[in-house]
Amino acid sequence: MADLQPVDTVLWMARGTWVAMTLRAACGLGVFDQLDQPRTAPDLAAALGSDPHATARLLVALTDLGLLERDGHGDGAYANSATGATLREDHPSGVRNLVLMQSWLPNVASWTRLEDAVRTGSSVFEAVNGMPSWEHLSRHPEAEALFNRAMARRAAGQIEAILAGVDLTGVRTVVDVGGGRGAMLAGILEAGPDLSGVVADRPEVAAEAEVAFAEAGLGARAHGVAADFFDSVPAGADLYVISNVLHDWDDAECVAILATVRAAMSEGARLVVVEKLLDAPRSFEDTRDLHFVDLHMLVMFGARERTKPEYDALLVAAGFPPGSVPDAETSWNVIETTR
Image (cartoon, rainbow, N blue to C red; front, side, top):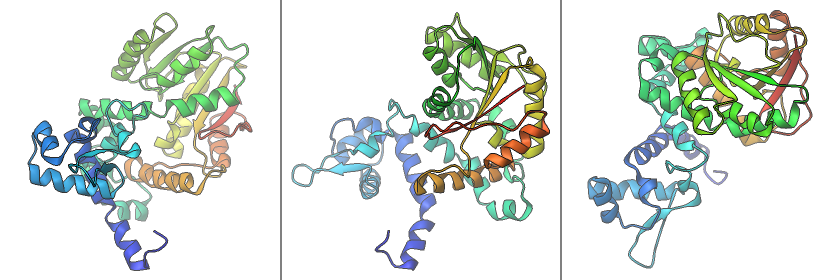
């Protein structure tokens, strides 16, 4: 990029939607899953049931993106590069789920109204798609399942942040508020064999968590509980965790969520908020990614990423003391406070 002229740089940026949709098409067709071994374009097209000429054109573009490699001396067969292999369905990163979720048409269509979102400071998703994002997602079960899988891929980094920055001594019960399918809670429980916990989330999501816990051999220690975190969450736990949730909501809604959690907590119970802080040190690439996630929160929910002082203001408004942030260098940040 540094060698390109300014106009060419802007032109490449403008192609960003095309790049995302190329990845989406390749994932949807199963290109990366079929290229676990080298295949020529005609062979791959036969395996995919796709048009041979159009398939060849797609493979050329994927090679230009560094996602595929081509044998230049043999039969011209294509294979996944190390980068392309991350888009296989079975890759442990789960990044394929995120690619498909973020390139889902209702989400992309909402981004075409970013200008309006910036003018008003409000979400444009409902104006584009006819209903709020969460309601829209609940009416599309396949997309909702994809969303939950995409969010679960972040669990490893969140688990790392909690285990590195939170003293779990004396903790016996954990409530993961809005914890999805329970991947993060499962990781915490695996690190602490004396711990038990629940994921409090929407009924259909809590049911998925229940199944996931049973499949992971944690059914005796972990459960999914149907809850609306604007109304109530399970009471009496030692530790409450809200991870990657508050950035989905505006300030007033965040205060309402935190107040609900506080009402469920006994005196001395602890709250841990896991988010990516805008003012935390990180690489240029990670900071740039967070700034775009911040815009995505605006477009989708009228919400935002925040700094540590901004999260403290929410905590105080909900009745908590300001939080503390551990020194641990992790990709996710932890803010801890006490009832």
